[in-house]
Length: 419
Image 1: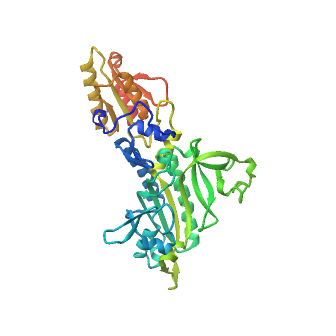
Image 2: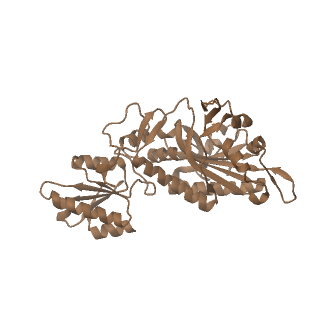
Image 3: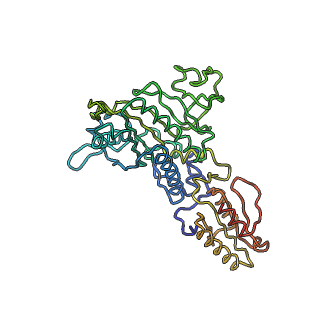
């Protein structure tokens, strides 16, 4: 993509009233545009990142869990929430049909997916079943803050599993844990994202969160260095020790963290509400047992920025960066035409090899502005074509996190990128 044609511009100053790094840098870098507190538009750069996060999730869920992707509506009939007793929860957005019907905007999708599954589940032959979607959620948060970390409208992956037995749910639940670990590793935050015991609410004694350690987090966890698991601050009183090695709470490290995912057993809570049953091998009618597994894609995107940035801008992990290469053209005074021709040729070669490249062909920007934008946007590899590189018969390359650049031949550059 040519940067001259990119929708969205970088900003020289931080947006007003934004404290969190992800809010400041994603807005300044032209990834998102804030419409109001907790509500953002995703611009082309941000949408590319979000798409890569989504595809990593899809890959793990499709391959490791055999889940099927669907897409459910955002508008939900209030009657379904009355059945589950969730019609009075305070974060629901309410609306009405012209005919007078009462609807809510989906804050999660149990009230839709269970009646949907009921149409297709009748026998034990139909189980287990995993259904997931990547969709917009709406929550009337009283304090939307911290950029993408706490929004009123956000993108979420929610997976629901359906089982004949508790044992089958437990096996699937463990597979989901492993799939989540793989997802966060591929997203570039696996080494600082840990399984965390949390309160299970009405469903079970414990649920599990995946918490990414960062000073920007709004949660507090107690982390065991030996076992690489943690306990959420809300349950440290009832379980004042590591859940695995039993180390006492005073031995655990108190850390700030961002919740990027959660998993918990629903048991028969929603199956009972909608009379979701199956016929077992002996012909007996039994309730379907369920699990639920969530990842906030937009929140993950914000968390990645909170973890991977410096004073100049974002440092995207290669797996989710909007482009692989940021090609920067510096025309100079004497050989502008030759520099332009060389940069254009290299750009076409990269595209021909299916290498994702953002080409800074803007004629109205100084070299300093181009380099500052490259650092702010944070694409992993910067490649510069200039009079200097022409004289040395190569291109200048620099990884985003490194201080020093070096000159390599175009052929060598292409071989590096192909690998």
